[in-house]
Every structure is written in structure tokens, then in C-alpha cells.
Image (tube, rainbow, N blue to C red; front, side):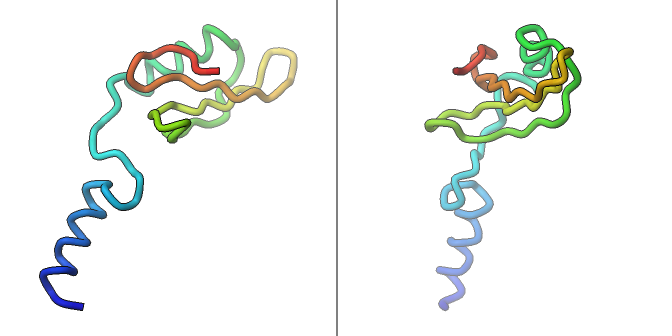
Length: 84
């Protein structure tokens, strides 16, 4: 592979153009997203991850509810609102 093409590919990957990863940081912090998630679904947070859902950045928060049920809650990383 030509060095220039290899360099451009590496830059594209690091910027998120090729891999589908965003080059911009979410507007809502993880702390804010967790607060929103636990307000709607009280319990213990088991895990969280920034993911793509239907073309939008969302925090996926896994919560063990007070009744012992595991629920996934999605919080929009731009607006801070719950996503269905």
C-alpha cells in the first residue's frame, strides 16, 4: 500500500470516519447520564457504555433495580433525555 494512502487511512480511523466512532465528545457527561438513568430507574448501576442507537450517541446504562431485575436504560448523550 502506498505510504500516503496508508497515512490517510490511519487519520480517517483515528478521526472516527471509517470505524463509526464519533470524533466529537458527547454534550452530556457520564455523571449526568447516570443521574438521569437512576432517577427513572432507581437501583445499582452494573455497567455503562457510550453506543450508537439509531444514528445517535446514547449512554447505555445497565441497572439492577430495587426489585432485583436488570434493566437497560438509554440516555441521549446530546440532550440528556431518556431514549425509548
